[in-house]
Image: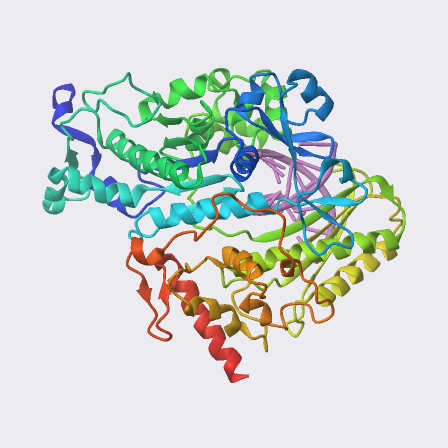
Length: 571
DNA sequence: GTGGTGAGC
DNA sequence: GGCTCACCAC
């Protein structure tokens, strides 16, 4: 057996077939997590043209919610008060998040002395926008075939399943794999018969700087690491954002790897390095175990060390934690995890929330904030429409908290009737209805926090809405990208002319003429300009119905749109 | 549908 | 600690 090691792989032809299918069962699969370094501070540094070497924090009320790495070297940490930050680092640059304010129709960056939690509501739009720009850059940088598996995990984290792409590269690079046609599924693959000296990564677990007899799982991660390095370079070149990345055989390890060293590093965990990596990791760092559940486990077994939890037999683990959770924990501390990368790059819900200090005591005060929530959500809905057809919310939820985050909560949710047009007035009326229901049920004042959420986005447009007007800008080449509406918005404002898609009166407010987007916001990104030109970078798909150029990743959505359009015409 | 948990900036 | 997001148990 040992003697054959250099000639025969440990993996079968079947394992290779699973790789091209991006199967969660492939031992060769390649998963990456990209995580921007202190995302909000980078957004602000770039927007303001400030050197990334200067200490900077993003401020929200009297605390900082993001701390860049130069500031961390002064001992500044997240959630620190502004006063304490200044005492630690007198030269700190503080940038407050933009805010909504009653009577104003849009969010804006405002000067700190005027910002008050009593009158303002934080707006995180610039970070969501930059998050989407990054995703678009990644989607158009990755090849369109095989199908892209890109998951937006949070505003600043992106999972990639690179398995199928890696498979393609592997076959081109190792023609020996082309000969497997004659093999049966259970036959072992030939050995790569190569060595790896450059890992395209800053840290590798499972080997020293070189590896003399890599097997195909090492090769696949190595190729994945090349792809990730290219993506990171592109993100920096085009957007000036640095990120850290982890590359491994599953999401759990990719995520952990990305946090191994920051900022601006990438880390690989090879299969044979899994044990070493995990036994140096604190148990509560594992995804899903940072909260109560992790505490329970630590209490039950009196240790936060994975190395000690590895001694716990499965039966004991399931006895202590229940079958489902017990088995799950038993697996993940061994690096066993097989969840799939969910190909989703859009949010599934939008929430607008406010904590009241002091608590509000009347329905009139609540109403005032509901209006701002509605403006906020409609503005964001409009942004989403600019790059996605799947934009009609069908559910609206109001949440009410007497105490803070951990106090009791009550919520009311309804399905928006199909006949309802989404307008500022209609959304507000529905939200107010929900508020009345909540208030009627039991004592609701004083109230610490309210939030309004829209969800259940559907591709089908509301009956009667002039959905075709969204697309007028798209027929205006040459300098518009298929998703350049955000920029268009600013261009239109510059020209003193409303964007075409706002002419859809059914989906904007007929009552209140001043929609958020009708006023230019005060923010601009210094890197602004046409986002990209798809036409020059890739072969666009030409729609047989309307001749429009469609990015491959948008084809299905576009076809859905035609269905919706036909339905709309039929009515 | 409702309430709750976990996560990240 | 505030503001989001996703997911799950019931």
